[in-house]
Image 1 (cartoon, rainbow, N blue to C red):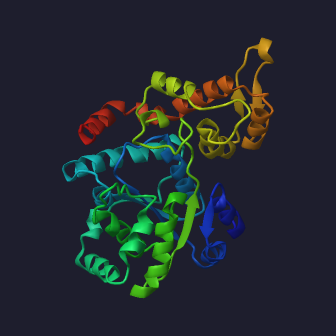
Image 2 (spheres, rainbow, N blue to C red; image 1 turned 180 degrees about the vertical axis):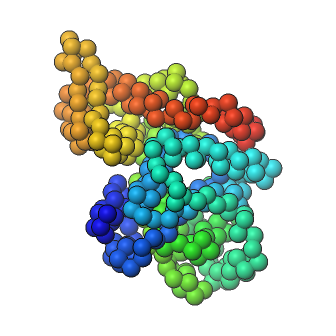
Image 3 (cartoon, rainbow, N blue to C red; image 1 turned 30 degrees about the horizontal axis):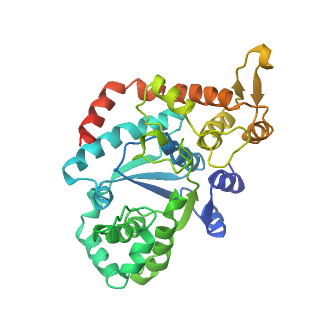
Length: 340
């Protein structure tokens, strides 16, 4: 794979890259660049996580070393109770590799890292204090506003969060940090402040946030907005059937968004069509080679919402087979981690 092909693979389905020029330079100068994504161990993993699982799979295909940070301390800073922190870490550690298996990713260059294994280091903590002497309260609150749940009476922990995320880039030794577009303010906070402590700014890559099933951001805390990776077939079919999916409308359509950013990425990589099974009296099966064809058919109402929902539910149930093969241990771990 040449440099342009790698660049195109990293860039696909992204919302923003800061910057394209820096990314191209990195690909030209470094044979195996490093990228990381941090996921705070807060809510239960849901199918929206597949957006970033697939993007990390793109980085792997492009020859990157990928570090997946299971950010246990960040989970605590964002209101995860300390007494369940280790239990949630154990659940994430078990379920996330299976999500990569669900999408057929080659994970030989993927490394999972526990945040507290290096974030409690004396030098790291010294740097946290250094940054806190010039980063203002307003700087930190603004940076974390779209990520941390501040509430009416904000805790100091939420202000520490972006400082630690900034330093993770340096202590993980990466060239790129990747995350959702909701991370943008923290990414810019990092790029602005790294030089102040003698560290180099990193490249920041962002993908869009997909709407939930009720037309808003998919959220672990809103049950009907998302599909938990442990949901059974009946629950998935019910949630998809009840999803906000108005005929001819694509805005805030979580079913179409998941299809675009997850299912069709896998289909196209495997050179497979998206097939909507219909009775002959309704015109027979519909076959699509790419997402643009699907969206066009949906806009002109050739593709009915119910047919779309039924097919997407079928695809999700099929994709989750590696999860279901481990369902007992996952349910046990999940029950321990989320019993409160």
